[in-house]
Length: 130
Image 1 (cartoon, rainbow, N blue to C red):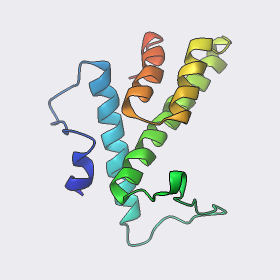
Image 2: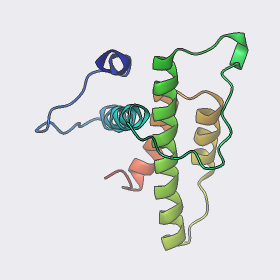
Image 3: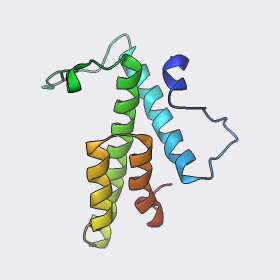
């Protein structure tokens, strides 16, 4: 499991709080990867109610399990950020920020830590990354 997460970078100690936005997003992605890995290796995996298995045939070459774990954890953090932003918008009644929408489109087109940090930067300005 540590080999899988090595691709995501270093982990944090309990005392250490990341200061930069990249570090904070990286910690979230690493935590999501650990959670996904635990769920995948559980003795009684969670039911896959109505989910259709996704084919790994993008661009003709299958992804390794490490790449798949990294992408799944990026997407999970992205979904969590989306939930936070929608909750914020519901409470404040503000419209969607066009620049944030563009950053989200860029992440969906090319999921990576860099494009996820671009999305998180807008939410950090709104103080939604706690």
